[in-house]
Every structure is written in C-alpha cells, then in structure tokens.
Length: 626
Ligand SMILES: *[C@@H]1O[C@H](CO)[C@@H](O)[C@H](O)[C@H]1NC(C)=O
Ligand SMILES: *[C@@H]1O[C@H](CO)[C@@H](O)[C@H](O)[C@H]1NC(C)=O
Ligand SMILES: *[C@@H]1O[C@H](CO)[C@@H](O)[C@H](O)[C@H]1NC(C)=O
Ligand SMILES: *[C@@H]1O[C@H](CO)[C@@H](O)[C@H](O)[C@H]1NC(C)=O
Ligand SMILES: *[C@@H]1O[C@H](CO)[C@@H](O)[C@H](O)[C@H]1NC(C)=O
Image 1: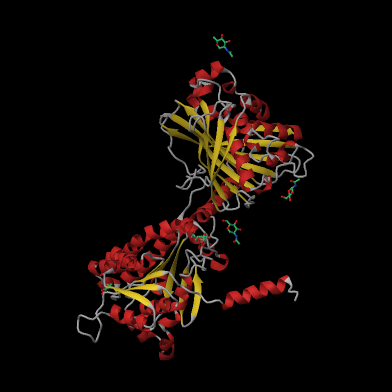
Image 2: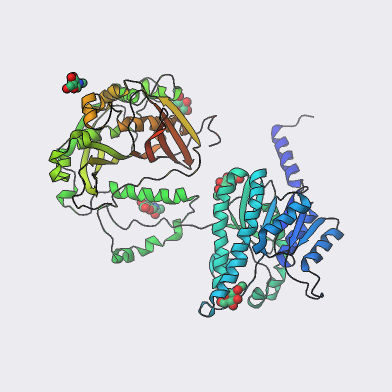
C-alpha cells in the first residue's frame, strides 16, 4: 500500500498522542507529600513507573504519634505495585531528603518542591517570627532541597524542578503578607534557575495550584470547592516533569482540570521627555500617566536583555529627537559639519580597510560592486568622527584650556553608531557634530560628541551616533564626572564566549585604513608621533578594529547581511599594532551580540563592554546552535 507523506505524519501524530508518558527508571522527590497536592503528585508519579521519595514531617492524624503520614502514602503506593520510600526530614534539611533518594534509588531526576505551611494575619499584626518561619519553609526549604539535588542534575545533564507558588503571591491576598512574599520569591528563584540550568538539561517551572484548603473553603461556593481536587492538578505537574516536556522558566496556573501559563507583562510605556538634555518633573509624569499605564499594547519581555534592550531604544529616540527648545547652543553648528561624497570605490576601500577579504565568502558582497548584495560595511559612518570632531577646534570650545595638550594625547574612547537607513553605496552626505557634555575624569577629560549623517539629496537621516573623545591629562577642571547623555556600555554575560572569530590584520592595515577613512592622524603611521603619544609603534585606528568586529559579527550571526545591522557600542581599551591577530569573542543574547576583541599575540583586550544589536539573526550551518 502506498502511504502519502501527509498520512504518515498524521499517523505519527496519532501515535504520539496515544503513547503513554512513563517515568520508568526516573527517581522523583516530592516534598510535603503526606497529604493534599503532594500526595496526589507522589501517587501519580509512582503509578507512572517512577521511584518516589515521599517526604513529609507530619504525624498521622488518627495514629499514635509514631505513625507518619509519609508512611501511609508509601504503603498506598506499594499496595498498588509501585516503588516508594518515606522521608521525614524538614525541608530545611533538604540534603537529607535528596540523600534518601540517592541511598535508596541511586539517583534523582525530578524534584517537586511542594512543602509549605500557612499562618494568616493582617500585615499590621504579623510579627517578624511569623515572617521568618514562612520564609524558612517556603523559600529556604525549597532552596536547600534544590541545592542538594542540583549537582546530580548538573552531572547527569538532566533534571526537572518544580516550585510551588500561589495566587496570593502573584496577585496578593489579605492577611498573607509573609506567605505571598515567600511565594513570589520562588518565582524569582525559578526564573534564574531556568537560565542557569538551561545548558545542563535542567528545566525549572513554577506551578500555581488552586486546591481546596481551609482558606479557600470559606470563600468559594461548595460546588466549586469540591472540584478543587489535587488529582486534577497532579497530571499538569507530571507533564511538566516529563522528559518530553521542554517547558522551562514558566509559571503554570492550574485547578479544576484547567491549566494556563502566566507572564509578567509590561506596557509599551511612554517617553517622558523630548531629548536627552531635558530634565523630568513629577508634573510631566502625572500628565503622561495614562500612557505609562496603558496596558492595551503591553507585552512580555523574554529576557532581561530584551527588557533593558528596549530601554536602549529610548536612549536612541531621545538622542535623535530634535531638541525641545530652540536655543541655538543645542543645534548643530554648520562649522562642525563634514560634507563628503563617496562612491563604490570608497565603500570597497573601507571594506578592505577593516579587513574584508575575498578569501571570506561573506565579505565578497562588500568588495565586488556587481555582487547581487553589494553593500557597505555598516560601521562606515563612524569614519567621519575623528575628522569632524577630534580634528577640529571643537575640542577647544569644549575645553578652553586645552592649548597645551598634544594631539597624540587625544584618543577615541568610546563609539556608538546606529544606522537608520540602508547605507547607500554612493552618496553625497553631511555628518554634523555637536558637543553634548564635557566630563571630568580627574586624569583625563572626556568629551561626548553627538553626530548624525544626512543624505544631502534626499534629506534623510542615515545614521546617528556618539563618540567619546578622551584627552589625557586634561581632567581636574571641576566638571561633572558622569552624564546621562552617555550611551552606556554593557558587560558581556559571565560565561565563556559562545563563539569567536580570529583574523590577522595585515602589517599595512593602518596605512590602508588611513586612506579608507580619511583619518590621516600621523599617530597611525609616524613612529616619532606615536612615541610622543606614549606608544612604542604606530597603532591601528580603534575604529578599524571596530570594523573588523562588525564584519565578524555580521558573518557569524547575519550571514554578512548588512541590512540586519541596527547599532553598535564599543569602548576602545588598548591599541593594536598592525599585523597582530584580532579575536572577536561573541555572546548571543537574543538579537544582541555582546562582544570583545582581544589581541591574540599578547591576550590583551582591544574592545570591551561592546555589543551590536541586530534587527534579526540569521544563522549558518556552523552557528545553528547559537
Ligand atoms: C504569617 O504571618 C501571620 C501574621 O500575619 C502569622 O499568623 C502566621 O503564623 C505567619 N505564617 C507562618 C506560616 O508563620
Ligand atoms: C529553558 O530551556 C529551554 C530549552 O529547554 C530554552 O529554550 C529556554 O530559553 C530556557 N528558558 C530560560 C528562561 O532560560
Ligand atoms: C511605544 O512607545 C514608543 C516610545 O517608547 C513610541 O515611539 C511608540 O509609538 C509606542 N507604540 C505604541 C504602540 O504605543
Ligand atoms: C543576497 O541576499 C539574499 C537575501 O539574504 C540571499 O538569498 C542571496 O543568496 C544573496 N545573494 C548572494 C549572491 O549571496
Ligand atoms: C623621527 O625622528 C628622528 C630623529 O629626530 C628622525 O631622524 C626621523 O626621520 C623621524 N622619523 C620620521 C618617520 O619622521
């Protein structure tokens, strides 16, 4: 018989939906499993083949003090042919509970942190002991048990963790100040463990059960109350703990045979001032409050990187927006404008200047004008900075007593650039500069210079940016140390780089880059000048290393596609001598690629605190896992 492909996949689906979830060979620890939810979990896991540690410190209600509720549950499991062992330790002795699993069954795969207690009073009457006992059982107890299981999970590269939160935590509940804060603390713990465990196959989730309890009994109708059965929540927890379930870092609410996922969401918010120069008053906040709190377009941020990343857009909007007042000091002075016509040859020369090579297939589109995707390496519009700002009398206006500073003492400290429109391969452009602020860093002065590049013909703004010029020896003039104009650097995540690209610069790299960028500063070619600047030999332009990194990141995360480039921010730390080898270390966090550049020969950092935001990530075969 001939079975069509479609039919086969339908069949597969059917087989999948019919297959039973089993926990054979899996060892499950459930805390607080003597009754209620915990008991329902333990019974269900055992019936599905798991070896279960039934933890509960409570004594049986009707029994003599010696019989324990955990024993009752273990007997029930055994009578149904399952495997289980009891443990009576307090969750604060979490290591003993986990040890019971290891001693009896040799491993642990699943930990359901379910143990908890309730003690309700209004906040005014709550004592600090009331607070501590709740924190101890719910938060510290869950932490201790999890901490004891964690090394086993890490080592076997597999684990499933459940924390039990509560609607009182997510939504608040009268009389449960201690309880609700403890329950919400578990959400924070789960959020971080989901991230930390991700690379070790450890999934951490939060269950928010609504089960019948003394509390709920009083406040809900009887029909409803009678359906709040633990047995209707246990299957949701069992699924979350199965190896086929990839859910991680989620909050799942469940009751009555219903389950739903819960998120923190954030409104789009409202920018409360017009430009970086403006301050903010409580009155303005009041006047915009409706927009700040308008949840109609609210959405979830998938990660801390995304949450803060969106704040970067605010900075960009503020720095690109026209000034709110019309004072002339705020506008661009035509005196500090560079007009420049470039064509495809300049674009190609720039690509060569930043190390593009025909040896690299992804670079070819920057080097050959007939290539289908011929385009300009998107760091291009930084080249006018050193010419327009550092080379003009702009610095003197910023620092009137600059007279004695040697040109070799002027360095490019940091650079930010955002590309707003696809960079034309030939154009007549104007880059305008203005000083935002002069900072006093004691030993040196830092001048923040904003720039924007306009396509003269269309009048469109192509790029905006900010450079930080460092003037050695010019500090101590009593200016501010920091400024909220500064586009901040962002540290790379504290893990090894996800991927690195290594490329040797050529001995004439600075000589080529001088022509490519027009930045003819002799520091980059004249040994005598570089010695005056404190360097043994002529150094490569910092912006040249930045161009290398930009290409490396585009080739790794965008298959070279320049249209996916959004913005870059970098700090130039130490110089590169032409001919040295650059290694760009990259960390991907969503669409943000953190990076640093290292000189391989002496392991010395060149660029740090840097990132490139992409509009989208396009991975190749080798990078598909990143
Ligand atoms: C929580 O605080 C209340 C007082 O607000 C107290 O009665 C109760 O015992 C505390 N809960 C626990 C579990 O200690
Ligand atoms: C949890 O792990 C999954 C893979 O199982 C991953 O896709 C997800 O991003 C992780 N969640 C968090 C919050 O790290
Ligand atoms: C969201 O806020 C940004 C400013 O942060 C604004 O430019 C944009 O128009 C807003 N979008 C919506 C849908 O309100
Ligand atoms: C040009 O870019 C498109 C879209 O990214 C891609 O599909 C195509 O293969 C590229 N062309 C060449 C010659 O690389
Ligand atoms: C550097 O200075 C020395 C001594 O003054 C001089 O002989 C040499 O020509 C200079 N080199 C350059 C590249 O100007």
